[in-house]
Image 1 (cartoon, rainbow, N blue to C red):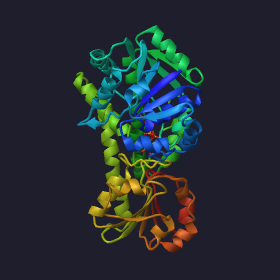
Image 2: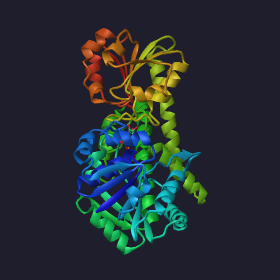
Image 3: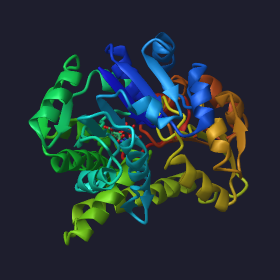
Image 4: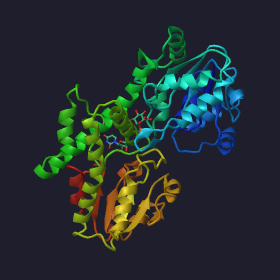
Length: 426
Ligand code: UGA
């Protein structure tokens, strides 16, 4: 099939690569000229395992990049809109979606299907179609196929979806979209565009809710002397609950959960519904930073002033350089505000982090960053940090104190080596 993708960001690029990999002809339109020239040269502007190889495999064969909308769109049977929907005071900002819609309207082929992949509130398709109809010469339909991929595992998730949700008004559109997704596994959910959009928001609300629940149980574990990992394993093994996303720690960050939770709270409010559960989810997540900072202060004998504290991991999670809403930022800012001498390290996110945090010393090598440190704070659970040589770390640190924000280390082993260890709820 001939396809177009609007926006070469995270979702757009992965969508384009996956459909190219499945044998379609894909043209990607992106307004940032530098991004287009980089992609044409086989370079990707963010870190994501596996994408580079697929890009090189399909580039200029069945995958093309341009900044010309009509070049990308005029032959496409299906056009995916994959532009950002940032939050503005809690509300999803749809200006990029509408701008993309207007730009493609003029070049649409007769009976083209415009698929919104961006996360948008229910009802957006109708207002988008209305704006586009004023400009379009040909008939078209707007559908929704939300994306459920995780950064760091984007390619795997996109090629092995647990479900494909197709929100379309007409049978013709849903049939065509079903055919396009046929090579992919996973259950199909065929529904209205409004339901599809709410499925996306509800999913990105439910998972944070599980995380905040896990963190609330962890706080109880800290007080009662229970181990949160045992507790949540015991809870999650009930299939109705499930162990995934029941991991206690310093809470969720990233470009999706915080934004989508805020947007769903806002959307509910606008429609007269007070979504108390979700508000509590967001509040619990915010409070988790203070809770963890308190643990750091306690472990540093009540004061972090002038102490060298090494933070391991900056990106919002491993296998990505993405710093959006990364939990490292508020933790580092608060430690700096309290007068600590903060050192940081990360396998890939240092250059992205440099524009966001300034009061710290950056290190490439974790062992160098830990030399002379009075506390180590694990923020992002990169494999490199899971496999640290703690005998060496013990010799390098001034005080052997480990604060484990992701509960990845074995308390007994570290205590045996002479470390003071604090996790979250264990
Ligand atoms: C999330 C969803 O998992 C995807 O399904 C969705 O498609 C995507 O948002 C999106 O809307 O685009 P992502 O933001 O890449 O994916 O990252 P996750 O792996 O979900 O992690 C989000 C945050 O939750 C991270 O900060 C992670 O450390 C935290 N987390 C995750 C926990 O604190 N505990 C857990 O048990 C799991």
